[in-house]
Image (cartoon, rainbow over all chains, first blue to last red; front, side):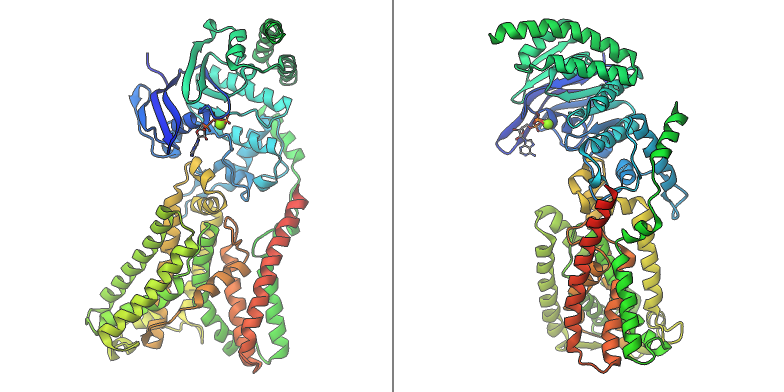
Length: 289
Length: 344
Ligand SMILES: Nc1ncnc2c1ncn2[C@@H]1O[C@H](COP(=O)(O)OP(=O)(O)OP(=O)(O)O)[C@@H](O)[C@H]1O
Ligand SMILES: [Mg+2]
């Protein structure tokens, strides 16, 4: 069995800080791997290794079963791995359309007259954002003048557009409204259906559970648990993550998202979630009192 | 479904007005400034637009402009180069000494001088990237090294501070004919290069992917790196571009004056930066314009020549310069924040 991408016992240190120690995680085509953990658990560090921004100090990283050494995110992009970074990786003074295609510019013409295809780039950006329900006034608008949620949507739309095989999302719903958060979860399900591997990072089990197939829980840089969904009731996941009481709210969020987007998968996920959430809440109350 | 979405998108998109587009261009302030300066001197002096007068400010504006465009690109990329001025003198004198003391053929001397230029740019770039020190400090160091080494070696080898080209080189050589030609009226060849370089740099910035990369490494290097922009290579290339431009200007100067003098260009590094700022470059990087930098250089020389034409003391030039710089910096800031508010 070869995985689309696989990190095998990778470690990463920053000076004295051991950010990751012997962490293994993998994603298969058509599956969603969720990486969960508290703040500082090492989630972002792990995905920065997967996307080529950091090189691991130990362990191996394989793509299609073959060990690789990415020296920059460029290499990862060329292997079809696109990432939404937690800090979004945008340049505030640059136009939306320039940010969208930054590093992967859409060109036309032959050298030395090779140039950016501005009209097509702008059209693509407007279309891709439109699919997310975001309508920007002008693709020339500087990213720095967008709202936080709009910026996040641009980053996600960009990764979805360029992610040919693997999509890595680092806390993609953090700044989003209910509708856009629903859209992101729908994107995750769509990508999965198209046979992409998705890695979804979050510290919120209620975001992860409805869409995930496989859960890796990090704690202080080490793997604390690694489960397939079948082996892990939501209740247990919530317990492991400790805390997270606003289940009802999240259920509503999902349901509303399913209604506004009219997505059946999401509606199904929401109702599954509702049942399991009810159990978990019951349990949570027992614990608390 | 897709068509549906794009029509919605089009409905919601308001075409930004032409005026706003012009107003939000970084070179906007410099265009106003250039018109104002030209109008002012046309009134206070006679025939400021005569062919003589025009070539009197276009010729020096050309060499200043070639440097300012290169420095503007570097500043958009988020870095400074304080060694660029001293380098011009160093490269000219290197070429001159190689043809006289070392008796090398002129093309070889020019080539070696170019190699030196590229090495200095490479050194600046690699130092800035490896040490992570501000380029302001690194290139200030290079400035002193160049100035000191230049003086030291030239004195040691020749015992002089001015090197004259040989008779043949100063009169009939092909290089002389090219680098010191005067193709149109009193307009010298650097003007042609200046215009071509400005056009090329503008195309590069606004329509090529390298332009995108330059804006991004100055605007947010970490983000640029995260999406696959080769940040280090872009920055090093920008430093080399400045030194190669310094080489070009050094060749123009040396062949035109038939000599090279140690100390040429020292002090002008700030003029390059000021012209770039007048042209709309932000000191913090990520924003600016090549055309703007060229217009900045033009303003510079129009004022310098205008004062001479008006028979005013040259002392006023520095005063004018300081005021221009502050006004430009304020205008940049004002236009930018206003444009932002209008858009959001
Ligand atoms: N570049 C760095 N230099 C030094 N330490 C770092 C660096 N990047 C991360 N760390 C440290 O490594 C640990 C893991 O950080 P990481 O960003 O991976 O956490 P995270 O799980 O993504 O947290 P969050 O949920 O807050 O995003 C933290 O203790 C952090 O301080
Ligand atoms: Mg993180």
